[in-house]
Image (cartoon, rainbow, N blue to C red; front, side, top):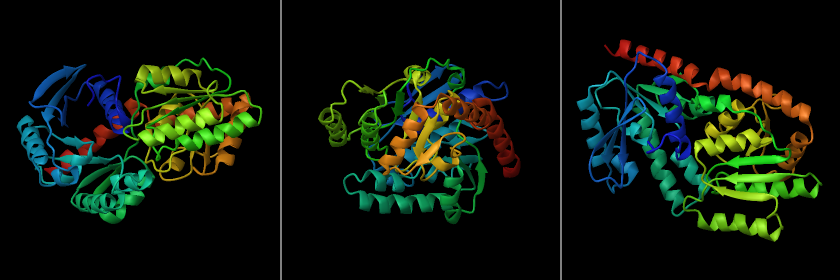
Length: 371
């Protein structure tokens, strides 16, 4: 849980805040958030706009061990039990090991570290992938209730668990539905970590083809390397070697207000990732009426209806990505039609009130059947 709700880091924090804001609109719920933070040495409890946040000190144990056997799990369980909640909704990886907490609970599967590691290929990724795959399989096998944020997640977890699976999309903040359109013709926007999995370098290669086709376009890239220094340097090198400095802006990490401003001015949002479950950035762009081009892998095809609410391309097919970008940038009517369809779908699936209503119904069902 970030110190500022307007500055979440990554999709899980963004999704958690979206759900919290939806639940905060209701009068029949009291919300507490419990987090582990490695740099903290003592417990801090604070109020954040109607939510009580409990920040607990973390520890140096490897997470795939700590979630099942370590001091982190023990501290979380003891503290949560002391709060005596009616139900616990685990949003992060520690939920894998909380099957024995003794309180009605559910666990949202936001992602798979085993798959992310394979896409990013960091140090010792093969060994770490194997360890996480076993940890995920064990933790999922012990669950009684799981939230699946996309049919892709359901497909991945069904062979691993006998839990009841609840299909509920992630919520995005209501402010994304209120963004005024101030479109800057030719503006392409990307937001995400600048690492191999998100494939910003592939986007730049496609953008080179857009420019070569004579389209007057600009590319705004929001995000930070997150430890991927070499990849970030490769992005900078590609921009410099192809003389794209006047057309490409590296914006760094943006807060939610800054992202909304970029979306208000964008003609197209693009996310050519190799691995994603249900990226919040796509849902936010749909709510903001910005046409989306994303990859045709993992969970993204379940968010985008090809040709109706956006376009899907292979993450390695730079020609097709460039073609779709050119098609959207040069056809205002097409952009308008896709924007309207995407907005309607976003209201049904991602609006915080809609998601909170489905979530509360799940909570009541879990509590009723746990008695």
